[in-house]
Image (cartoon, rainbow, N blue to C red; front, side, top):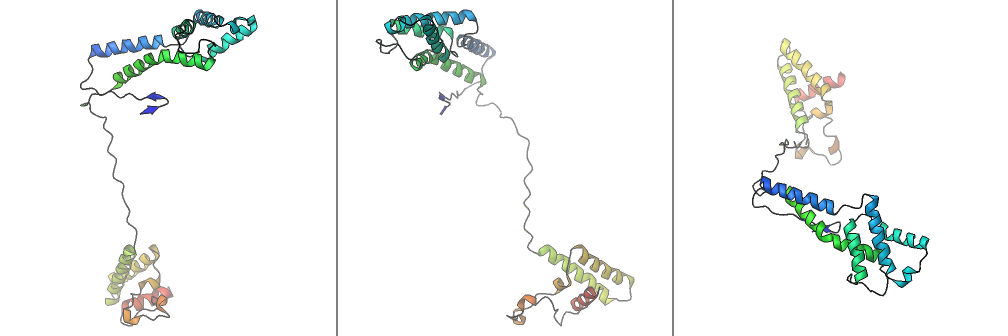
Length: 247
């Protein structure tokens, strides 16, 4: 797998690194980082400028430039390789002057060609650095993965298909039947009050109290209005419907 132009490195360890191995890898990583660091002082910049100037002077067309043009040309070459180490820039200049860069020796290399030459010199060290860093962060196969806190299972709410409302209606009817069977007792009166309170609490309309008709009672013209009138054989519903409407 390649990401950002670089191949991903994922080493597989058979065992955990010892303290000595980890210390050696850390030292190697620090040395590679120091070797690949870009110039940080004016002295290093002067050495790079001198190397680039000597490389350009090796080509007759470039040697005839005046001072201002030469400085601008050298500055352009140094700009494109500003993020590379000093030793790589100097070595690239020596390869061009010695004809070992793999370029056409009759012409001065362009800035992109010179930058690519420097990059190829640094690439093996950059690869070793990535391998070293990958080894330092690699985990052995028996290393325990960090445990994540258990998440509660999401509660799936079942859609209301009318069963809850039907259960409330059944409770209202039972309370009302209790009041109808014993009209003189205090408890039945309280049962009626509770039934009416439940109708208000759950927004139960009087028309909701009627039972569904049988197949033989359906009228194609008025079947949507079947719940308006209770059946003649359902006295408690009829009584509750009449009193609720009056209330």
